[in-house]
Image (tube, rainbow, N blue to C red; front, side, top):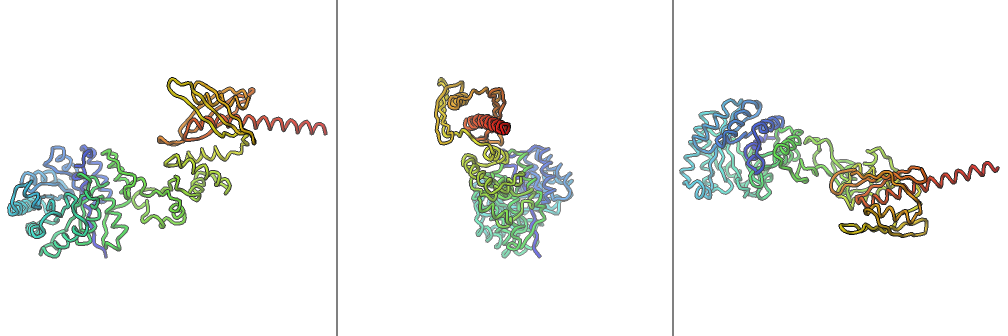
Length: 518
């Protein structure tokens, strides 16, 4: 039987203090409702004394959210605590969360109080809060830099006054897991009435160890973790809720604890917070980042196609993401490419796959990521059965402000190589004129268009041309990350269609004449 770890979400309080992450009244209500669906145990809705807006949002959340404990933060003084209770009194499950600093650094430079004065303030604050509601949490601000003997003394005193939760914050992200775990263990072993409260961890990520410190606290007796969606918060942020929840779920056997979090709501919660605050997360963010369930390396993709557990320790569905993604890039292999083409409805032979793969790797060297439309364009461009009379070997264009656009094109016909140059209204027009000079074919350009088949600066451009030769219309197309190259290839593709059609016409005419002669 595993112990339960309570998840105390402070996205709306500590998280909102992150620069640029403030939310208005309506946005806070939306986020609170999503946190309820996520099934967090406590929502710290705000700091009621801070502003009228904070007060009103805490008050409204307390009225609307009925299945989750609603906490309001207050400093250890009467004005803050009275204001907190005023905002919480309509809650189904209210909690007053009061705090005061306990480190000598804060006592000397910030509070300018003695240890005795701080101890007295802490005791009085808990006593007053307890007179309003049964659930009272007390936090020892900057606990990780506090003297352990004094910390034990103040924790014992607030428990005696009726605190139900005692929080040991690593306020400035100074702790490392071993030391933070020792603090929790010392409190468990040295405070005689510690069994009357839930010990809580509140860690910041200044050294990138907020989640690790929180888990170390759990392994040493803490049964509440304070965290935020996407890890937002002061400076480098707080412990990430999604990382905490999935670490506990994935490594239950090692931690011997569980949470009541509905993990399938994690991704929705993350996305909602991003949309409300505009604070995007990095692609490689654990659990909810765009790359969290994406695989590009060929070896990894091959393993994923055989069995996802080879490279995934949790399923994307467990956090609310529909499926993993095999990202096609320069590290991808033939197995993944064939699989993606099959998903798109193209069952390629080994020869077709090899031809497509060679083109794919060239494009992948130019693009960071290959999209489905890119693959279709590659297939249409490279695997057509058109016999190329003229093959593009080389071309070079010169164009710019106050320069005459010039193109030099080299074409191969059979074993022969031809090269010529021309000028035009632009680099594409110049290249087309050079091709006409080489082939000797009079061409009328009827239509020319370019469209992006994906998105981003490195997207493939698909070029369509329509030409008329001797009254007959032919189409040509090509795709390339270089639109000039694509334009030249598309034009040459149309000319090859024309030459091929002329050849078939002459061949069919010759066959008919021979048949008539017989």
